[in-house]
Image (cartoon, rainbow, N blue to C red; front, side, top):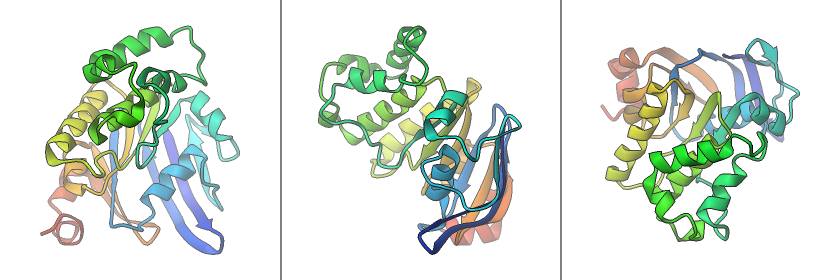
Length: 233
C-alpha cells in the first residue's frame, strides 16, 4: 500500500531523513522504533505531507503522492494522529470528532461517529464537554477517534503512549491492536519500543535519520543488538 524509497527531508540545512526506504502492505501493523531524534516523527510528517520531502519517492497504491497536499493525502486515505494529540481544547468532544470528517463529507460520518462512540464509550459520555477538560488518556482516545472519522486506509500514529500512565498505555495499545485486527493498515511510531513491537507484524529501527534494521516484530524483539540499544537490555 505504501512504498517509501530513498526518502530525504531536512529542516533548513539540517538533514532529518537520509535515504529512508520502507513499505507497508495492506492490513499490516508496522512499527517504527528508535531513540529520540532518530527521525521517526519526521518520517510520518513527510508521509502525511506536513513536512516536505527533499529527494526520494512516496507511493500510495502505486501512485506517486510526493506532490500531493496534506488534504489530498487525507482524501486518498492517509490520516495521521499527531504527536501530543493536538485536540482543539475549546471545542466540544463531538465537534473535534466531526472535524475529522472534513475531507470525506458528512454523508457516512454519522455511522462512523456511532462506531467511534462504541469503541470509546467515555467520548459518548463526554461528547458535549470541552476537549480540554479530558484527561491525557481520554484526549488520546479523542485523537484516535477523530482520525477514524476520516475513514483512513492508512493510519499514521505518532507516539500515542506519550505522557500516559502505564495502565492507560496498555489500554491505548489494546485499541490499536484491535484496529489492526479489524484490517486497518497502521504505521506506528512510539518511544515504547517493546510495546509497539509486541502488537506489530513487522518493524523498522531508525537512528540518525536512517533505517538501521528491519524485520518481523518478533525477530526485532529477540535481536540482541536491538534489545541493548532500544529495549533496555
